[in-house]
Length: 246
Image 1 (spheres, rainbow, N blue to C red):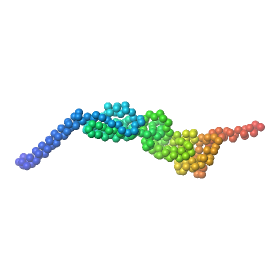
Image 2 (cartoon, one colour; image 1 turned 120 degrees about the vertical axis):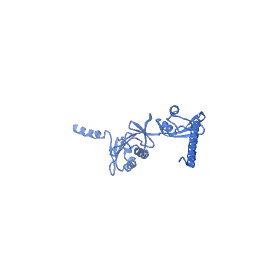
Image 3 (cartoon, rainbow, N blue to C red; image 1 turned 180 degrees about the vertical axis):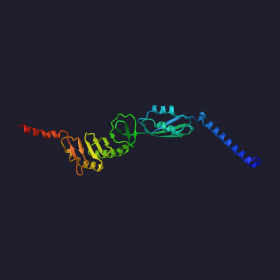
Image 4 (tube, helix red, strand yellow; image 1 turned 60 degrees about the horizontal axis):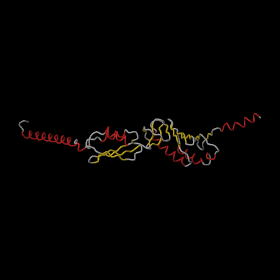
């Protein structure tokens, strides 16, 4: 090879080219790290109800590393998404020195037993919430399904002025709904929506006309439902005891 000047020239040109590229790269890295490219503003967007200014400032102060060019957007996004009420974050650079951060908060729909909250997408998250919310009770992995069914239950029961406050699904997929009035509806595993629709359709001419409030309705019947009324059995027994005493 040493007696081939053409090959030596070509190799030299390649080495010179690589050296030039390395020099450009080093120079570029030095330039983009200059103070002139520091991030000077973080603009926060989105409808924020639970995320506070102090929380955002804490993340900015502790987690944002680098300048306009060197900031790792994926790491920055992950840092903001660790905040309790944050569901999703969009992070974008805006030339020449601004970072735009758009938050999407969780919207609480229900409590998952007493260990977490459920958002309107059927996702579990952990955060402090002191307001009234319905309660979901079910096996792991059923939160999304329960969110969908809760929406149906709520819309259907609104027609008779009732509101679900607890929805349960058993490991065997049987549904039970407790209402704000104290009434419990046993819906079972099959034809859940049809059974509830039958109950709503019959409510005005049946339970609504009773002189007292029932506590339990079993809808697992083909052509009707069974009702349990507190104290009714004792009241029926009292006249019989009186006749025996006479």
